[in-house]
Image 1: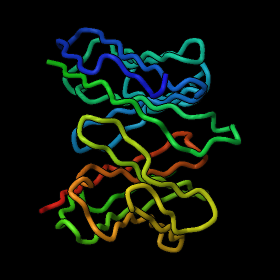
Image 2 (image 1 turned 180 degrees about the horizontal axis):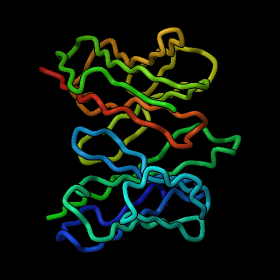
Image 3 (image 1 turned 90 degrees about the vertical axis):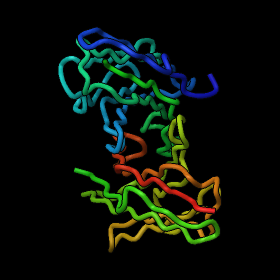
Amino acid sequence: GAGVSQSPSNKVTEKGKDVELRCDPISGHTALYWYRQSLGQGLEFLIYFQGNSAPDKSGLPSDRFSAERTGGSVSTLTIQRTQQEDSAVYLCASSLSVESRRSTGELFFGEGSRLTVL
Amino acid sequence: AQSVTQLGSHVSVSEGALVLLRCNYSSSVPPYLFWYVQYPNQGLQLLLKYTTGATLVKGINGFEAEFKKSETSFHLTKPSAHMSDAAEYFCAVSRTGGFKTIFGAGTRLFVKA
């Protein structure tokens, strides 16, 4: 697609439920990133994919969080047994591979998925 | 480890006044530095970036930033603020292009008429 697409744009769930957030990156971008944006907290790095592999999962806050990427394209971030502190905007970004000579280092962001856990 | 500090979570200026948003970074290797802007209910978009070369970098919408290695700073400026500049601004650092970009906490810019 023309830009990074995220769905759903808004999700309200009850504490303890599982949620899945989807990211469709820009065509041709092999690198994909998930960030969490909480009020007044800036952007917290969660995970980075190069192709289908995730070299850096260090930002995932707990084992309730997981992410996968298939076909080098769409990625899903799953939060199990949601807690109220998981409420935030989850941003996905994509970029050309960092190994690409065409890479400028710029991240292209989607509009985010706003998660509210009641 | 890399980190970014943005001084001031909120900055308020009058329309037509100078905009100065401060950013300091720490990095053990030569950094790539970025400023992104986020308008309400939107994702972030790149304003400008420094990778190598000229230390004064010009971006979109009349913004510019200067990389000062000795001060480990990358402050964002604009000579004359416009109402449409009201948004949140994020400074970011990465070691190589894009990989694990670390963001500051953001500075919300208010522009008064």
